[in-house]
Image (cartoon, rainbow, N blue to C red; front, side, top):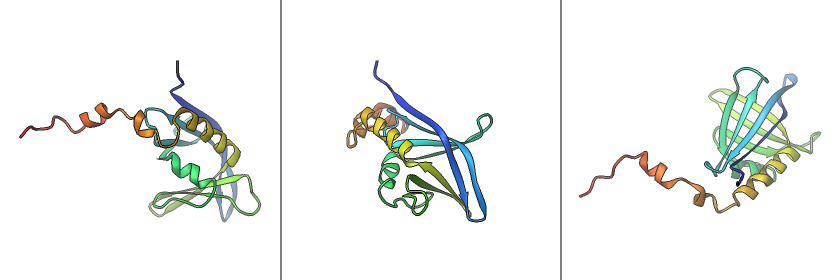
Length: 140
């Protein structure tokens, strides 16, 4: 049976200018049924987690250069942390900088691209399910 998803869990760090980094349990998940998206959840081992969903391509491109606009920005870390990736999350006036291990993210993405190669995502969409959301189409 073909694998339908991939998940990796590791410790990331929430960075702030005025505080030391705070470790946070982080999970990245990819599903073939939603081939364009990556889900990232942050939180304690038990208890509620904060979910974020953004494009797999954004995470992939962010390993090489700063990318994104709006609520999610991704960029390689610079300076003292060469093997880190920064994911900047914005929610209204609040901003969080999450520092992920670039190696863990790169390995995760490599597995997702083996599940669904870049450029073939639309072949994995459930078009019938998507069009059913719009209801019956009236005939002229």
